[in-house]
Length: 284
Image (cartoon, helix red, strand yellow):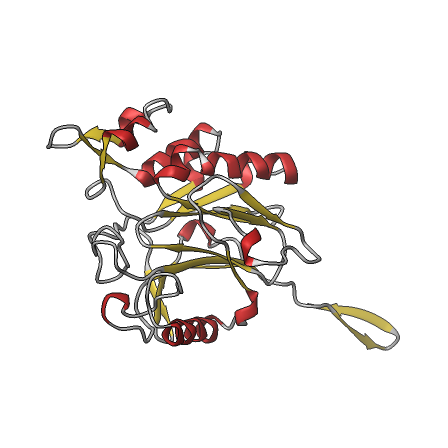
């Protein structure tokens, strides 16, 4: 289970599997630490759910201050429940309007860019190539999971960046769990053709309903790609069960906020040269 930490007023989780990646900043944030009220209490980061715009702006300000990341360095895509992956190069511009950001995953080796996923039951999946310093995030609701978005991110990291499966680490963040995610036969049918579906798709106690384990569905996709099991860590939190910590779309009846999950590659500190007695010494 991911441990809960706190920066200023903001609780967040971190995956132990990324502890060796000293170039990385990452957080699966909780719902506390903001100013939003009622159903959106309190660190809602979405402008699209009915919350007051001024409150959402303040929440982003709190987030920026707590993690010492300027607001302009956070990138959130539109999250349209598909399987498109946004690849951001290490330098140069990458988009000109919000309308162009209809993606559900982001991959980059750019420094000082916090790539984000908003969630309130869907699965945030983080990928890190610990050797090449490539990072990726995916928004894996049931539709994107059925489209194998996690597998497609791994394939892209291999094909475009030359990532080795042995060097890819994966953290599967808080989402609705198998204990609470009941789906109808139409959703279940979207998974029946996938390998090992009988492990994460089980009959419910009521007729023609199914219990879907979204974190496990993504974990199985990742394993099937050839990622070693020891390279994958799952949060252990169900957002429906723990609405004291997380927003849950299903648990709230559809009116709620969104928590933020982000990763960023830190920029290397510049080297300085100290000259003593006509000899140069590199200082990190």
